[in-house]
Length: 206
Image (cartoon, rainbow, N blue to C red; front, top):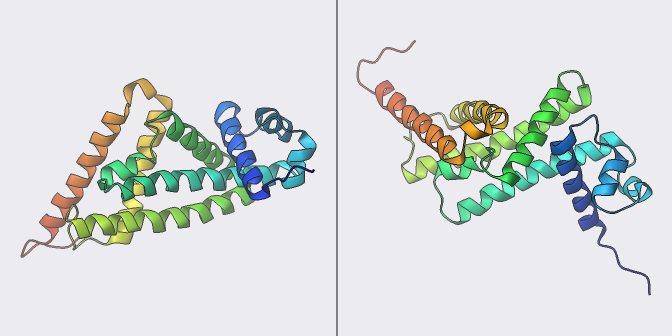
């Protein structure tokens, strides 16, 4: 009796292997053959799902985003704070470090590759919507003031997270999860102070 293959699960397992390969050796050295070795398949089996390297890399980018959101959702289900949820998008653990290495690799490639830049813009749009939801949840819980522009604050928070991400990827010993969480908390505290100051009577707008 022929073995029944769950093709959707097989695609995801290959994309997961591609993420691990990118994180370990970078985009240029990630090939169908390298990913095939990692997930114990033949190159032909990989090509059945992904006809070329670009298709495989696109799947890896999508998978890294999916896993990151899945980790954030799990924290939200547990009732975690905004800081704790956003920590999942920083390299504070082995898994999140792998996902962030993939993210950074693709940003580097996007500089000179139109298709990769387009894919990154698509992922950023999804990411912005997701972070905006977290900002709105923080407003509802009282962590952030209702007067803020949630979309703009989401963009600012993403910029803060990306800066921390780069520092932590290149200086992991100096940026443990505790320091990353503390930096996020201080940043959000400053958002609160700034919003409160802006709401004072007589405050001039720049």
